[in-house]
Structures are given as C-alpha cells and as structure tokens.
Image (cartoon, rainbow, N blue to C red; front, side, top):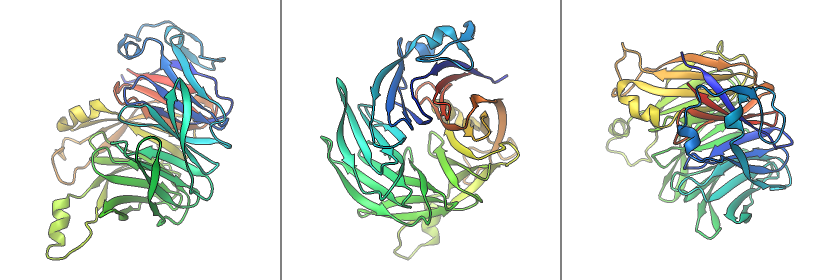
Length: 386
C-alpha cells in the first residue's frame, strides 16, 4: 500500500512559506516566505540521507528550529540543518524562489515588491542583480533548463523573459502581454524551448521563440476558474494544471509533423495544439488546488510500460494528495499520438500542514520518492513515499 511518511519539519520562517525549490543535485532545498527572507536547507549527511532506510525509524515530535505540530522521524529530523538565511531579501513578501538548474550556484527570488533578485554564494549569499520592470507584485520566477533564460510574471498581467549574459548581467528580451488578468506562475518545458504561463483569466498560454521574437503558440482553455500552476512530466510529454475549480487537467501536445501537414504550402509561424487527455474531477479536492508536482526519474523510466509516475497536489483543504498517472490497458499506449490517461488517488495526508493551506509541493529531481511541501503554517516538511 502506498503511503506518505513525514520525515522532517523545517521551522525558522516567521510567516507563511510560499514556495520551495530543490537544487539540481537534489541535496539542497530553498524556501521563501512572507517574512521577506529565503532559507537554504540540507541534510547533514548529504545524499546519503536520501538513500538510507527510513522505514523503521522511531517516531517522535521534533522539528528543525522550532516546535513540531506533527509526529516526525526523530533521527531524520535531527539530521537537517539550515545552511543559509537571506534576511530582508526584498522589501515585501518573497513569493517565488528557484535554483539555477545547471549547477545550482545561483538563486532567483521574486517578490511582491515587484523585483526579482539573483543571488550567488560567495561565503554568504550576495545579490548580484536586481531585475526591475513589473509594475507591481511579481508572482513567479523560473529558469530555462539551460540556465540562460529566466522568466518572471506578475499581477500586472505580464510575462517577462530575461537573458543571462554572465557575471550577474541580465537583459530583458521580451515582455508578453496577452493574458487579461494576473499571471500566477511561469514554467519552462524540460526539453523544448517552450514557456508556459498560468493565469487568473482561467487560461494557460504556451510561448515560443521565433527569430528572436516570443509569441503565443497555444492557449489552453478548460478550467472554469483561476489556474494556479502546473508541472510537466519528466519527458515533457504531458502537462498537468491545477485550478481554483478544484480539478487537475493533463494535457498533451499534438505532433509538429501533423501540424505542418495541416499547413502545407503556407508560410506560417508554427503553432502548437494541445488536447486534454485526463481530468481529476472536482470531487477529489474540496477547495482550490494551488500546486502540483510530477515525479522525476521513476516516471520517465517506466513510461514505456504505461506508468507515468505520481502527481502530488497541495490544496486549500489542507490535504496533501498523491495521484498515480497511467495508461489504461484498453488504450494501450504510451506510443500512440493521442494517449488516454487514467489518474487514481493512491494516498492522502489530511492536515499535512495543520489547519493551513498547502502552498507548494515539489518532488526531488534526483531522488523521486522524496517530496517537500510548505504552507501557511510557516513550516517546510519533508516526506517519503513508501
């Protein structure tokens, strides 16, 4: 039977924790908060922590840096430490945080003060660049897989794309204004040069570059309320989105060969067409879903057998849920052009952050059975899927 085990509680923030981000090695975790700070956490034993057997550890109330509210693994909790704290990183709430994905040396933070800061560790973390342009609250920041591009979005309905020139120098190369309401999150495709944005206008937009010009290649509609965010499957074949309408939708992209054939004989900017291949109905979650994450290596490795791993969702009903994604036997197919998918709830943890909303869930990119969550209770929690 699939179950979630709480292994550690990381306390130290003095306000709600909005987001967490693993570094590319999977051994450090960054968090950001309404207390205007960012923190970097890690197990003292490094990668050995994630490969050790935690199944028979004694359970006790414990936390890193403060009192615990739940039963956690005493031994594991005592092995985590706060490596760095960036106090007063911004003038207002730090809403989003992301490690640079190639080496993890740089850290980006986006704030309600409208700025995005780039931090590099030289002894202590130092701000090497401040990106300004959003008219008000910046809501999300995300690095492209190469680390060369950075995307931000905000309450001003815009998406900005920045290019890194090295040595803390960034140029804005595009401002995208096609959303009609707040943009809640930006997300890069793990393989293709595609950017996805999720908005209060109930839509998802996919952006692509053509001859140094970024344009909208697709608009995904189907949610009936604010789309809070999404996550790609590790191979990028599927996109999961979550919404205020209490549903999870999974989308896949129509093949470029098929689109090209449809437009044969015309010069055109190639669009992308997405279709919804699975929906988790609103009966599963009882309030808005704020965050979703898709398991890393395990899903990609077993996709040929029709097993696409697990989704984790963080919700306003205070419950952490794990959902299995798979191709039904009747549909056959992992290799078909338009695969049908099934999604089933395999376990849930009520009051995973007490009586507080769960703001973010993130699977570890290297150790795919490990999950980090954060919430309005100001705590970061580390879970193991068993």
